[in-house]
Image 1 (cartoon, rainbow, N blue to C red):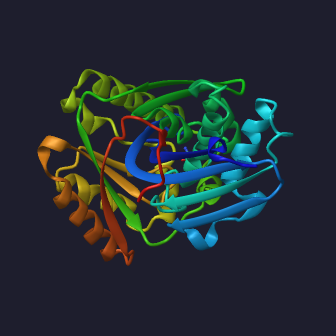
Image 2 (image 1 turned 120 degrees about the vertical axis):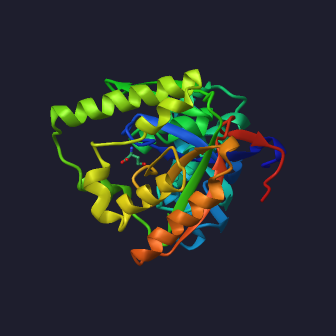
Length: 314
Ligand code: HSE
């Protein structure tokens, strides 16, 4: 019989990768969450039920991404013969295919819940290794696991992550366009090689961004969110991108960037500035001038990463 012991509920934050200059290496966790309720089964049934964002497009059965993560963990710890199926219930709030890490929430949710049920055989760094393998890059899965800001380095397939809570208290303003953008398409438009001056542009800003956040130097942040490695090429996929960045900055934002591979745009301000509503309105209004309908989310930085919950909640 399957019983309560084979069940765990986890809450996973949506994430924003790149943060401007940190292509494929920087990420941050936000206070919008997906919930995953996992029951491991000894039989080989896989049942997936979901509510909320993207419900109609979430694969049921064995193609489900959270199930693939559960299975990968079971294999890793040598329990795949014992548990061959699962019931997975999700309640999703993170918009799908918009650059807020919805696929990472499924991967991290599946891994974390299965790990909890099995008595936590893997630590967070081991979960990160599996999550990176499943996602292909670490910049969304790392903050989904650790919370806060993360810097990740890949070396011959291995991932190392530094996570920290910024000393500048940030408020995040995300303009969420109605249209989806696939990461695959957004990566296809990128060049294979980049100019040395663009590499220097990004290295200097990414370094400045982390130093400013760690030291609480808000005065250095206006230099730190710009990018020359991916956004110029992705601009054509997000109508009005540069103008929305300008509108956000004119409304007082410290900086703005594409969230992950898009289509969301994210602007950064501080909690104490209280400018978030003004920035949100300016971004949505500017998108409208480019015939893009959007809604704004005003979020904080999530401090905890994936958390085990007592029950699924909205
Ligand atoms: N760093 C990745 C990209 C994030 O920008 O393509 C995608 O989730």
